[in-house]
Amino acid sequence: MRIAFSGAACTGKTTTIDAFLQKWVNYTVVHSKYRKIIKNKKHSKETTPKLQKEILDILAEENKPFTLHNNVVYDICPLDNLIYTLWAHGKSKKGFTESFVKDCIEKVKESLRNLDIIFVCTRDLMPPVVQKNGIRETDPVYIEEVNNLFKEIAKQAQSNLGKSPFFPKDDSPAVIELYGTPEERTALISLYVTPEGNAFGEEQSFVNMDEINKMYSLIVEQKDLLSNEQKQKLGILDITK
Image (tube, rainbow, N blue to C red):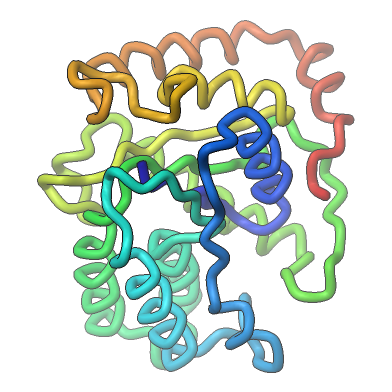
């Protein structure tokens, strides 16, 4: 399968991928070349339409070589690019017109056909401290705004993927929200990925959305049952490395 891990900065994506690879050893990571592009350029809050388009073109091309039968993991995908474009548009950043955003949405929708599952990492139950790595944005307000966009689109896709304006109506990846510690996230992933690395479903190779919706509802209910003390205890665990 082709699995992508998405999410705002400092949501534990790298740690989650490392934990995933320890359990599903038959997967390999496709490291995106986009980081070389942004290394010496203003990005994140200071991004431009030109840079966003350049990054999107790279991410879309990186998805093309692989099929359902390749076990690969992406540490970012076109959905991430779209989220940051939507944020910039919402802030009325120069050049992020409705026309530009619509063009990006169409390109992202088409490229998402090349993914089978997108796990969206969120900051729920994570510590408020944001660690620096020299590249990513560390403004907590900005990170929270982007994180909320990821959560909203993930929930929208989960509740009615066929009607989401950001995903293709057919041949769309499943979109699953991940939160908590690496161990908790691995447990959540195990609800959707078999020990052999396939998707749970009728043919053990395609995602059964009815079953996923039932499991997702159960996860949400279990999360809501956590006491504030339990959430606080989980929140001090640092998974932002």
